[in-house]
Amino acid sequence: MLQIYLVYQAFKIFSSKVRKVFAKAQFRVIMGKTSLKQGFRMIIVIDIGNSTVVLSGIEGDTVVFSGEVETNRRWDEVDYAYRLRPIVSGVTCRGVIISSVVPPITEAVRIAARTLLGVEPMVVDGQTETGLVVTLPEKEKIGRDRLVDAAWAAAHYPLPAVTADLGTATTLNVILPGGVFAGGIICAGIQTCLNALSQRTAQLPQLTLEHPEHLVGRNTQECMMSGAVRGTAAMVDGLVSEIETELGQPVTLLLTGGGGKYVTEFLRHPHVFDPDLTRKGLAYLYRRNHPHRDEA
Image (cartoon, rainbow, N blue to C red; front, side):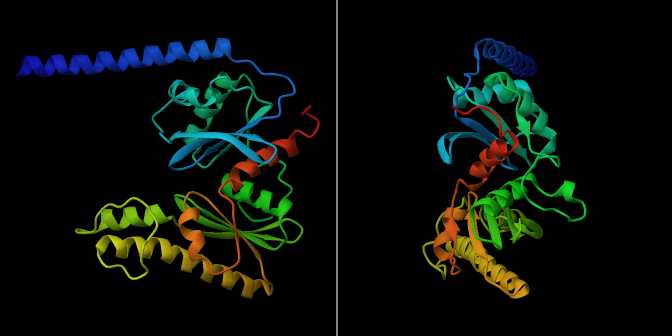
């Protein structure tokens, strides 16, 4: 038995090394083959979230293609290049922009994107020209995705506005007339709520987010799903109503994020649901910060 175990462990180590060598070989090949076509209109936007890294191609305000890989803090630039390569195979672009809420992997993704696409990515940071007025303390700590959403809202919708981004966390951002970023609210995301119920209780099961069939659940799973999804809708409605009371005027409500499609039908407040809002916002920021780059 000991011999079998040792052989098994040796095989695991060998397989891991082979995978790394193969990945690095692929990494070098990509570097040699990728080129940038001058004047090509597509902008590659990369949204690094807590659960996934989403890479999309944007032309104008249209998402041409999109793909994602998991957010994994153990991966380096070789790992990310290896996994992102199928998404961008054969793609040429005008530029690349990255927004990240996971700083430990930002550099690895940046290097991978530069290698795959042959252009230096722009990373959204505190120096990025957003068009917003941000005078809050510790503004450097504001989530980049929140600023991207707010910048798009300020440039394209009547103000004041509230963006509600339903991802791993649910974030609400308030944008006042003049593009003033007033702050916001951060709550647990829908799937995060479901995960917490399963992990912190003895008998509640692990569920994957889906549309609830009933408000009043007929079994444990339906009760949990209704609480997470419709509870989030009620929470957003209630918070937006309170924001309007505090401001003394109605707001434009913009809904986005992976959980948005589950909540939109249950919101009572008039709203615009745009699942591509963050990606459009990233492309907008790239153009805003490269106004003289030829798009012909």
